[in-house]
Length: 369
Image (cartoon, rainbow, N blue to C red; front, top):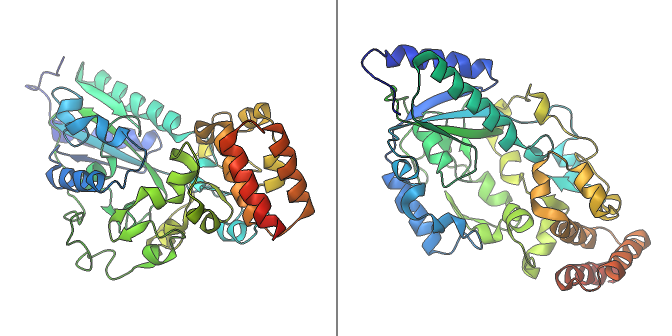
């Protein structure tokens, strides 16, 4: 049931919510309305172009993604939060990427699964609001439903959507997670950072990204096909995490030793010089996944994979895709009898797995050249 509004000072309530959110470990909180008209247009164009690849969930929910009130009845505001995740105690990304015998895992996945961490905190925040004012309508989201989280975060003042389509904050860069509370409470709106530049004319009139094209230039597979436009079918994060089948041959060499995700567009962003290492223990690196040896990873049994990735977002890809990704990285590594032996051993073990054998054969052909 919606809260009774007669005796609630919403400006005062928001001030309390901001304090409670910091106590729960969130670095920033903002409130937006639910008008996502411009972002809805951009999303529809993106899907029409086929840039979502096999992520059919991007279109199956219809208009719910850009109309919060259709997803959760009576929603009139969205509380957005951000939580820093850059681990302070891991090997430097550049050093791992430059060592082809190691596997690179996107830094967001080195610690505990952020979905679980943030969802619990947002639930605690909602419970605290309930204690203060009584029952109210809400629902918590952390990348778990058809939610345009970056668009909502931009509207709430947490940052702006950069040319790589990640959210950037002037004081914190882009190394942070986002979460939302859909609510029927008419809280005061936060000021957005700027009008969103998500349309076809977006570009140099972006006052914060300016004329910078570092992310477009560095992308290994040229997935950022234009400012503010990513073709997920080319993106290494999509290829290593979202894609279930065979990775197109034309992208394999460019993947290098990236076995789970890709951080290149963030690593090169000038705004990330302001990023701060996270104080959240759950997001600290679980060694040795910050700089793992590829042949050792390739030798893990499924039981070892499940044990080593317990509580991690990495588990979502499953054992088969894990081996698929590592096989490509081994194919990109310098020629080594140890690697060839490891590949042959796995081929013999998984001989009936057509998809996995295809990637192993590709890696063996590269090693034998």
